[in-house]
Image (tube, rainbow, N blue to C red):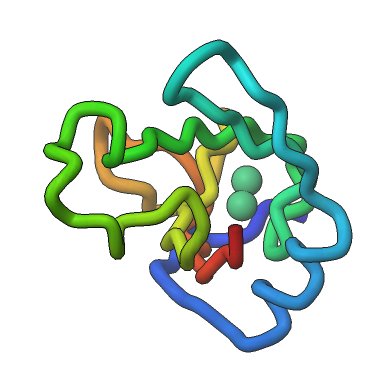
Length: 96
Ligand SMILES: [Zn+2]
Ligand SMILES: [Zn+2]
């Protein structure tokens, strides 16, 4: 069954992603979140760019932890997806 593309979020997305996603470190400033999409179950990689790397050091509140809004980036087909887009439309907050 193919899920239709739908930009949507549910509290359960964040919960299941917190359990199943892992963070891979790729050198300075790049981390990649890997895991199954909580909506369409496709294995996805989501690059996280740390803003602290290119920002100034005058804002210590921009720590390496926080909440990142991530979107599904799967390559599988989803009905109704806009041209040139990826993913099923699911997005959620990931607590870093
Ligand atoms: Zn998805
Ligand atoms: Zn998908």
